[in-house]
Length: 161
Image 1 (tube, rainbow, N blue to C red):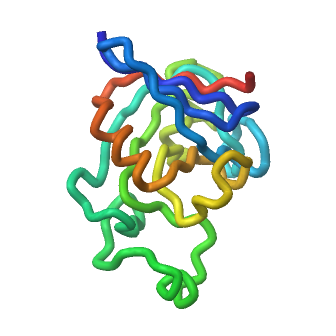
Image 2 (image 1 turned 90 degrees about the vertical axis):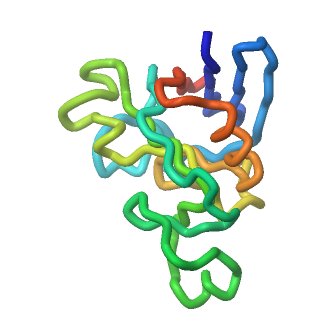
């Protein structure tokens, strides 16, 4: 048995259950625009997913990623003022791929093609409220912990409950 992740949009919580049957709960932020499957909707997709790729192993906390590649700088409030990003992708990336054909896989609803990630955020004060552009945001410490406890292929279920 491998780890499994459940994401509750209503509760803004991510629950990790490990093979040892240990359970961990983390505050998250899903999309400010709600749930939905369509490309370019800025909504969080629902349904069964898997972790298709893990990006950022051993990267320093607050590493800024662009195009899934680590940049040469770390996020800080002063960097944020200079760059004017709106949805920083920090520390680690767990890239999700949908498993439900027609719901979150292939065509205009493909989660992987939409670049739906679980990732660290600069807006940790907003965790617990919908505020992302579609991804699942976590605190930087929590995403490091989750990254280390999951493998490629880990099941991820995103639901509205």
